[in-house]
Image 1 (cartoon, rainbow, N blue to C red):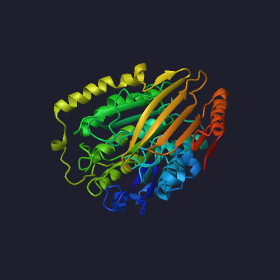
Image 2: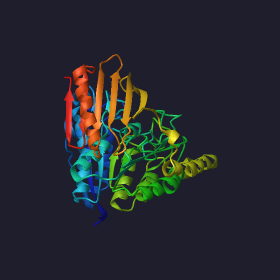
Image 3: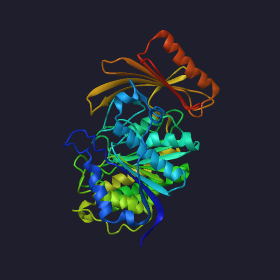
Length: 439
């Protein structure tokens, strides 16, 4: 009987009652074919691999991470809460020592959900990995966490959530934003003024295959992780880099995903995108599962896999090699001019217009970070959905000094007195207090 080298917990949540539309690739069949494949392969008969049920994320779990306007219940469905709860369960299994590793095969996905949430964008509403990570920090103590996003689309939501967090390293390897949604994810986007170098983007050319991805892993991702020394490694396990995916242009394979996972050795993986429902996901998820368990995956083959035909040209490999030479500098020696914002007095401010492609509206946002000398600084976000009321979000960070703590409450009190905002939300990570006003 096979025995897993690493005990592995697996959480499934296909979300039968949630889809973009009946024929949209983001629907329940994304996981049903995978579930059948793993059962047919006898994965759950392997000693050390066990399936678990998801938890249900609470409103507080979500508000610990996001400013949701007008409220959590207005933007997130029950399925979103269970998907986030599946990620939380994956975190519990590892942190409690019940499993060595865990894999949350859940949907809806979440890596395009930003700090401020007004609706859905990129099929995402709330950020599953961030909700899990902040649950872990609140429950088990503060941790240095690395999130490595292997989805084909830039993880702009996770980047935004952790833009100002020096204790979270976010690495996104994705198809070049000049060729695909969301049009971001370039090397100079390397973090806020208090977290420069903690955000690493690796934009890869269309057609990148196993060879290109593994070059990036060996020469960029692993050396940076070795230097950062995280307590936990999380894989945002998007699978739309696969050569059969209908909405992307990459040439990664199931074997490549498994090999990447073997090198990365994530403690926890959370499913993100991947829309070749029959031809890719069952095989990619099987490969990742076996790799996480420390088992042989050499027999995993998806239909149509031809390594020679899929390999990128030498010209593309040379381009990727040049990227591998340049990108580590954005971690080890980040340029100060890379920060997106301007300093006004004691505040660093950036103005943005964020398009919600799934729902077709624009959010106007002004984000301000207090440049504190004693902690990472208070965060303030003013946001307005197109033609809607203005909302205010204030976050007192988990490592806040007393001055930033007091400043946060002062801002909320002043806003209440002046009545400038329809909706207000306070995230006090220091004292685990989450408040809403204006309903």
